[in-house]
Image (cartoon, rainbow, N blue to C red; front, side):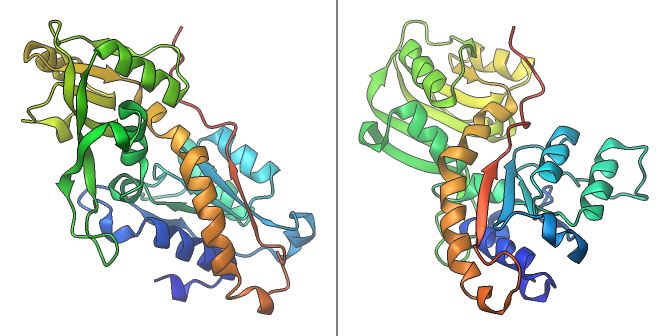
Length: 299
């Protein structure tokens, strides 16, 4: 697909993100990943763009993030959550998401979403969460995916969610401290189902983990959000819960992992086309959005 893209900038970004998080391992049964908006090239805007092509990383593509992308004169936005999720019968300014897409198209800014491909990839967001709560692989007896996917060569072990078995049973309070430090949060939602027991085995899932955790025999669920009844049922079974609000389990990954990895791959991919291009000779700059934030404030 990426070879048919007209813009060498878009083609370079798509090839790069696909190398890291191939769409083949995304959950296509419900997710909408890939190039969501291929905007027309605006040659009249070239003079106002930075010397490097700016790629903006965000969890959600909100109006304020669109404002930021336009102010930065970005060439491309990588949004973790897809802004286009369901079929659209029209594109008008009456809908805020459609308005954002129209504004971006007008500014020549394209949009790509990798979403569940980032979840499934080994070394992706779920492994980043596992490192945070376990304190590192040195503290783990084992780590495995919950739901395997049929990944392409090099991604055979990919899958959704993770089950981590710790080498030593650990107090719930210690795991809470690790999560707070890893995610940069002062407060979490915690349901204590331990009855004094230490935690040895845990299941984790970035975002919303309720459906992923069904019928698992573990000591702890670690995720962005569970419904009231899911959390209540877990506690009744003696399973503790650490819940952090959906996007707080994802946002830190952009700066810590995705930004440096993508910058390196973009450099490699751009070398293949840069000699024939008249714009962006200096390559790419990957920027993490400052306007992207969870819709909830914890007060």
